[in-house]
Image 1 (cartoon, helix red, strand yellow):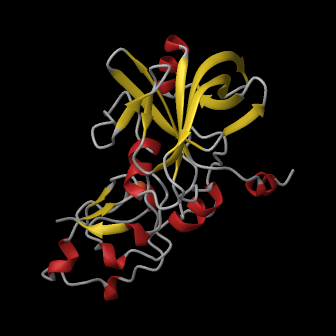
Image 2 (image 1 turned 135 degrees about the vertical axis):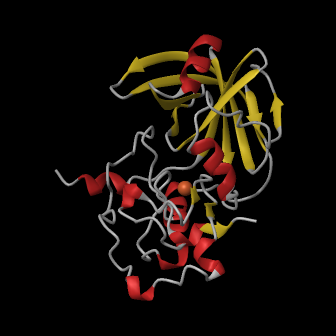
Amino acid sequence: MDKRALNKLSYGVYIVASALGEEKAGYIANTVFQISSTPPLVAISCHKNNSTLRFILESGVFSVSVLEKNTAATLIGEFGYFSSSDADKFTKVKTEVKTTGAPVVVDSSTAWLDCRVKDTLDVGTHILITGEVEDCGTLSDSEPLTYAWYREHFKAASPPNAPTYVKNPEPVPSGPSGISTSEALPANDPESKVTYICDICGYVYRPDDGDQSAGIPPDTSFTDLPDSYRCPVCNAGKDYFRPMD
Ligand code: FE
């Protein structure tokens, strides 16, 4: 079976969110699709480990925010690579409550759906949830972000909780290949100590520590990392790192 065929399926990129009282939860989803016109129904697929799942099942409601093509990488990183149980993802975004009570993220969104849970189905790693659209609206004429564009532009892989997750989608550097000791910057060069942060997920690369998961030894400056180096959290390429202030 050639699972690369699954990468040919087209998707959008969305924030699915819900709330219990004042507490909000949400995540980045690529699986949101309309399954019926009358009544208007959509389906989402939510990983069993996703903390937003409990919010959706207990509240019985969820929202879908359709992200714009120019959505900031940091917004996707905050909602896509961290758990709502570890961080309040909603401190930096504007939300509005429409009909059901689920928070709708209006920053960087071109449209929104407000849904009430109709049915659920255990489908393995994920729970398939159907929801009736009780309200919806558009926010701008902006082009929606597609999953294909996201993957190409951010050179990012699906996080483990995504239905489309593939373990090790491409070769991961197994050692410090491409790093030549003789080419390494001298220890007294200021660049050799500069820490870099991943704009997608916030991972910080510290030269003193290297990156054990990628076989990068301590005392390796960021600029000496091989071009194939990828963020160990979100798999973004080197271009998405910037020096920390
Ligand atoms: Fe990252």
